[in-house]
Amino acid sequence: MSIWEYANPKRFMQTSGHVLPWVSGLAVLSLATGLVWGFFFTPEDYKQGSTVKIIYLHVPAAMLAINIWAMMLVTSLVWLIRRHHVSALAAKAAAPIGLTMTLIALFTGAIWGQPMWGTWWAWDPRLTAFLILFLFYLGYLALWEAIDNPDTAADLTAVLCLVGSVFAVLSRYAVNFWNQGLHQGATLSLDKEENIADVFYIPLLISIAGFVLGFVALLLLRTRTEIRARRLKALQARERMA
Image (cartoon, rainbow, N blue to C red):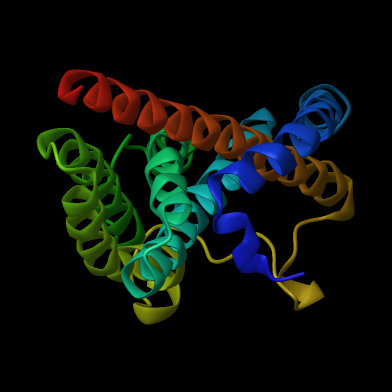
């Protein structure tokens, strides 16, 4: 079975219809477990106190904000190269979720940063790149709405996605590119010496899993909605021509 079979809207609708309830259920279970465990059953940090518990929202949201744009980049490239409509609609469907995750990351980062840095905002390299990424999300959504022809909109938003990917990379690796800045390094790393303490680590991983599964569930749901909306527009156009 080829992955390109799912570029067929009918095949995608059938498969996603079976998968969606399971992914949604796992997402709710993981989110509930990770957040309740993290906020109510982990100790305060010896330096940051209870403020550190915002990590269970901030880190998953920030990771998704960046990786959703990466997913949009891949699906946009698939659209540009192979002209599969489902991939373009999946990118469009993912954008509002990515925008929301970026907002959550910026908001929770400000709450976390204020007692640590003494300010709600600093023009730190990572924070600045993240703010620009947020603006790219807004621009991407606005461009879809501004153009009536869906194929033209998909082409132009795909190009915008390519440009915005630079800031997605900067958001992820700004701390590594520039030694200056207030933002800390990676919370999670393949190098165990850089990871947070185990008491915070496990519920954080569960929270991240919940956020990822929640994104997949919302992506499937929104892509299905986009496919139905496109079918409806096609039927309405045929009726007007008849």
